Length: 235
Image 1: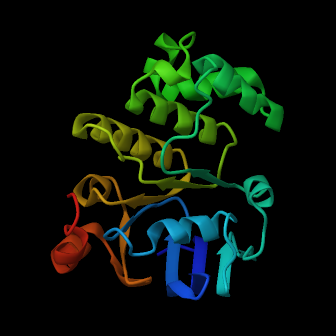
Image 2: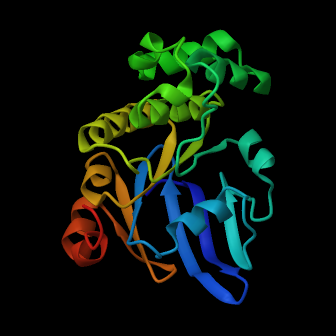
Image 3: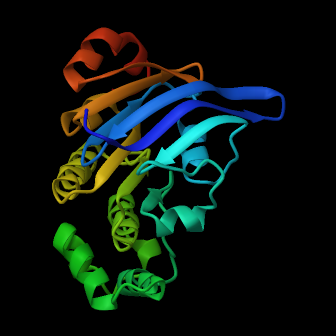
């Protein structure tokens, strides 16, 4: 592995007295796609919340590009290159596609550049540019959410359950785009239950169970050795 863009060391987090993360160790190499797999309740979404600054860790460290960011706020993390597409798609339903995208220009990115990036990766959004986001299909809303994230020119993109509620063909299409985004130099951590789809475009994979990372390695190796864990849900 190359120098990690993200390194999580012995990370712990809890809800009240219930410890959910029990010493997570994870490294995402620079410029790579890593799939983070595991069944419901494994701690995947809590890990995303802690990494992205939405929840405080109780112990351990998080390094982004070699800088310790364990207690950083979400807006600080965004400034240094971490961007999250949360579970459930974050778009403004009563605004058009173009209005959703141009809102990102308030973060300092020229509106033309935001639109060019979105329409290059997702030509369907160009066709829908005047449509209210809330009237689009789930897959199209996910494309819009990803485009909004890419507008900030992230170094590391966290994709939390990209496939949730979407048809398999749409999921395949979205993951093809994930591979394209990675080829431009963006590092990506995909939190997924649909193991086979995520592994198809991943360079590395890790498996969580019981609040810990229990295996990591190349996708074929992970599928072979951990299929009972990662295919316990939808595959």
